[in-house]
Length: 256
Image 1: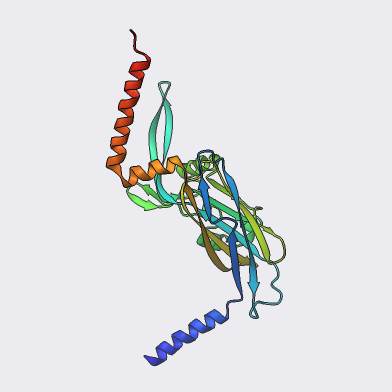
Image 2 (image 1 turned 135 degrees about the horizontal axis):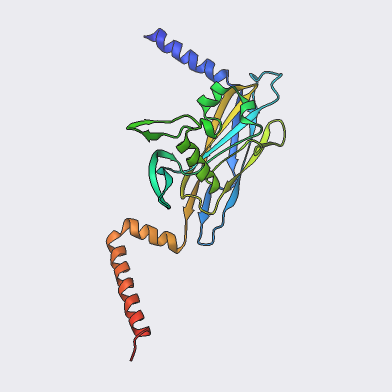
């Protein structure tokens, strides 16, 4: 037993000693407030690659892939067909707990950063991101060119909620980098996870994570919080407002 514990400790120590680089990152704002006149904004992610004595001397070029994921939710994509001059829903696909916002940024084309196998394993690029779906009673992802999957990504992309940009990350120096994170006007409320992955010569070196939060403030947030936390009070207030509106309308449009 002692030998086993000693072996485990040695493996952990050697694993930590062999770590040649680490990422230091931050975002320009960890809390974004959404007001009634919010029209979108852009955060800035910046950081550096820190080397140590174990870093190979000939390793000077790095690649970065930044993945930003918003709150997860269930969503549905429907297929419409025209029947007798009427557009009706004929089929649908349910996507389970997928990111409401998803952005992938890199400093060069994704397929030039690493091999297809590593890209699939590390979910590099929209085609490799896992989007779990309910398909005929099963729960799985499907091939990237599946009609429902393609339509889902296309619709989210048109709204600015899904995106990928292979030139968004800029290296200011060989180890200092930055990128912008655009947030559209209809950005979902909640916590956003940011994952930064480091590559060198096609090999995955390591990753780090950070996060930021988007919150709604003002009267809209007050109403939403009251409805969620004080349902009875919110219902009574709504009924009272409806009665008052009807009473005022009867006075204004009353015919003498």
